[in-house]
Amino acid sequence: MSNIKYPWLKKYLYYFDAKKLAHAQLFSGNSGIGKSYFSYELSKSLLCPNSTKLFDYCGKCTSCNSFNSGTHPDFKSIQLEGENKVIKISQLRGTKKDNGDEGILNFSHETPLISKSKIVHINSAENMNTESQNFLLKTLEEPSNNTYIFLTSSKPYLLKPTLLSRLNHISISFPKREETLDWLKSINVEINYQELNFLEDVNLIDLSSDLINQIRQEIDDFASDLAKCNSSKKIEKIASKWDDSNLLKKLNWLSKIIRNSIFLKVNQGDLKSPLFIESISYLANSKSLIDLFELSNELNNLIDGLAKGVNLNNKLQIKALLSLSLIHI
Image 1 (cartoon, rainbow, N blue to C red):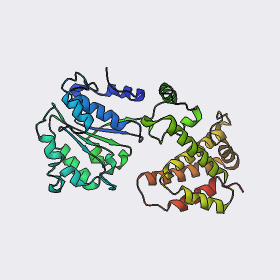
Image 2 (image 1 turned 60 degrees about the vertical axis):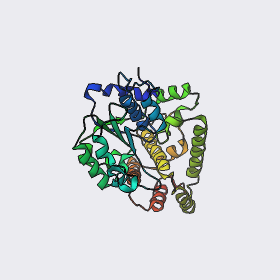
Image 3 (image 1 turned 45 degrees about the vertical axis):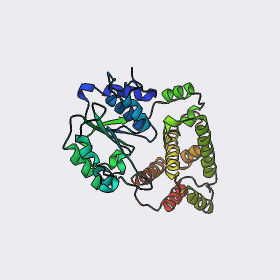
Image 4 (image 1 turned 90 degrees about the vertical axis):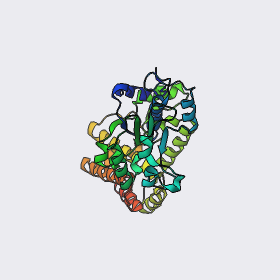
């Protein structure tokens, strides 16, 4: 029996066979979906001397205790450091300035100290620069039989195709609505069906009643902003307000509104009283399908650019999108 505690992750256990386990794995999916947790659970089972199968470990031995305390000598973690926005090659190659850190290449070829295996874990791998990705590719071309390299990423498309071709890719999807609602209910978190549509950009594994209340407040503020889109001056103010660290979340919410308006216009059906029904109805009644699809494409291009770190004039584009879509004049 595995130690996996999040129900939506358990179906991915069947992708793994101890006898055929790839030495280079990529776990991708939305932020907060449990990628790192899942790869850590796999790592603990590979390192635990008492483990009899993958994702199962004793939790009591020296290896398990060392892993939990972050001091396991056979586990090397690579991630963003401080205010750095990229994972630099020095973090993978190692330098004398890093207290004699020999880097992942030498680490992978050393004999394990307390376990049967050694593991390199690279979190948010999309942040590796070109040099880092090339160095990792070189490391993968010189594999060690007892070393595993695990990567997690919410933006795997930013990794080089040559690197992706060397990785066994497991894409973890957002759980089905019923599955998510059942799980939240089991941990005493109350949420309705409509609110659930707006949880795809939050840290699902850390959800709590307090976080849900915070999200509800954000949704109320977002709805209030949409209701104020009745003049160019007010749109200018909202565009300035939105141009912050939560911009991607707000644009994804706006994208859902436009998609729902397309659904309403095409099907003329009941959307079961979703959030932002006034904005959805307004778009469906005032815009043609061609206009709605064009809006959706423009918005998706902006979202993709932001996700890829493209330097865009966010305020100007937000203002244009709001003016074209939600202005009530």
